[in-house]
Amino acid sequence: MLDIIIDARQANLGNHFSVRRILPYRLRRMLGPFIFMDHAGPVSFSADQIPNMDVLPHPHIGLSTVSYLFNGQVTHRDSLGVEQVIRPGEVNWMTAGKGIAHSERFEDPATLAGGSLEMIQTWVALPTSAEEDDPSFTNYQPQELPIFTDKGIWMRLIAGEAFGLKNEVKTHSPLFYVHVVLQPGTRFGLPLGYAERGIYVAKGSIEVNGHRYGIGQLLVFSAGIDPVIIAQEASTVMMLGGEHLGERYIWWNFVSSSKERIEQAKADWIAGRIPLPPNDHAEFIPLPEDRSKPAGATPPPPPLS
Image (cartoon, rainbow, N blue to C red):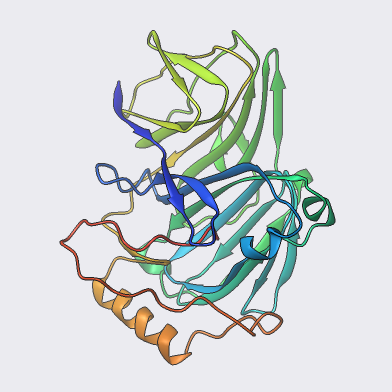
């Protein structure tokens, strides 16, 4: 029934900002096309801490980044010239394709005044046919993301198809990604029809098959199983999964079906062939030192972006 239970690990992004790192995991590199998942916050900043929290311009290839906030605001700027503030309930979907650079900065007055930030960041690997597509960016507003409610249940479809819901978020392979809020005692299930499915506990706790699971745990289920999920308290969970794309390599912010393509991306970033955001180019994150490690070792920690 349960393939694996993944406990989030603390990951330091290098600026004294720690997050819960869920994917990749050494025993489970991907869940459907999802190859990366971080849970940041909830955290409150003092005004003097804010500048240190900014994620400076950095590159991506071969993936789509998906940013979804529970609280706070983040300003996105990228090499396409896009500048977009993302707020709770919206989705920032950036497809890197053959290469893009972007930054994420915490410029919200409420955050500067001591408000809180909480967000989920995922990366969706691209099919080989789309890995070299031109980069793109789209912000989807809450009214574009269908909501379903029933007794004890509230959920928003972030992307893909699930529970009879569908939206216009552009994806490149079959997947589902759903934000679900459950009241105590509510019973729920996972969408069927996907080869790989999981549920991440962001808040509260749930029971599955007589066992209790809490914040920071990702439960991955076998195909064809229809688990009964029972909320033990008011809980927020993220349901995600889809069809597997095949083996992918990940190093820093680069994802590809080819090791050689990742080496090329490293060289491109060093040589400046991946342009910086035109409205945020005074500084950037340099390529991390490449310490050679055995195959399967954890790459340098990516920034939250």
